Image 1 (cartoon, protein in one colour):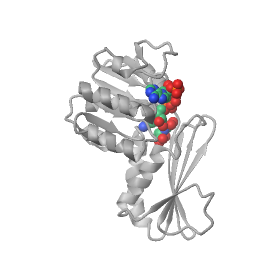
Image 2 (cartoon, helix red, strand yellow):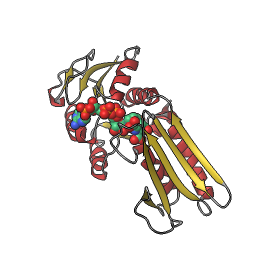
Image 3 (cartoon, protein in one colour):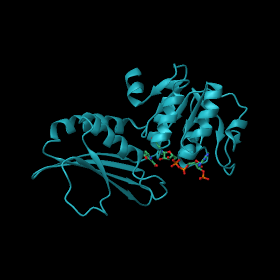
Length: 252
Ligand SMILES: NC(=O)C1=CN([C@@H]2O[C@H](COP(=O)(O)OP(=O)(O)OC[C@H]3O[C@@H](n4cnc5c(N)ncnc54)[C@H](OP(=O)(O)O)[C@@H]3O)[C@@H](O)[C@H]2O)C=CC1
Ligand SMILES: O=C(O)C1=N[C@H](C(=O)O)C[C@H](O)C1
């Protein structure tokens, strides 16, 4: 049985993962970490991760970038692998994650769903074929409780396209302050927030008289929870390193 420390255990994703893991014969949530102990969780919850005295095999984090430093200090000091799903991380946060991955296995993905990771592949191929004649815009939609904008997934899609196109593109966020025509060398990234939208990502390739739209819609948070639990199983027992969904998909 793999014992998980669920970081952000009281949050929306923490609660979905708690529910899913309760039916698992391979994994169990052995402890939680969150800002307070307000939920009736079936495991001990620590408001200071360093006080966690439960033996855990992996940490899954769906919390907030502010928690990153504490989680990594704790994980590195005890050699515990981490599945990092929190978005809104700064470039500095990513560097810290990469440094920690020299000492422990870190699995990082802004989107734990299988579908978005397939979308990334499709979009990279489409970009190579279309970029000379089509403008690329990304639109993401999420619930009204989301803190970060644009979504981590929208940024990951833009980065994947840019990598496929040899890093030639600048990002234009929303467009409210722009008073000139778009250039060929930009990717527009736009965020919509409302109600309970779980998560939508559309990549639009707009050309002369034709538009191609590649879209992923999440209709339940369970897809992210399933992916995170698979990632936890995947990183347990691995060498230190920085892993992602491609590593998991090619290993299964
Ligand atoms: N990679 C992926 O596939 C996915 C990633 N996410 C990301 O996961 C994160 C969490 O999402 P979600 O569950 O919807 O958010 P929630 O706000 O519902 O949950 C976050 C939880 O973390 C707690 N928290 C906040 N700050 C800290 C801290 N410094 N230390 C410990 N706990 C803290 C919050 O407490 P409080 O409410 O009191 O602030 C809350 O209980 C977001 O960044 C989101 O974008 C979400 C879905 C999929
Ligand atoms: O906050 C969310 O809900 C989600 N966040 C992730 C992101 O920022 O990309 C992934 C998913 O879309 C849900």
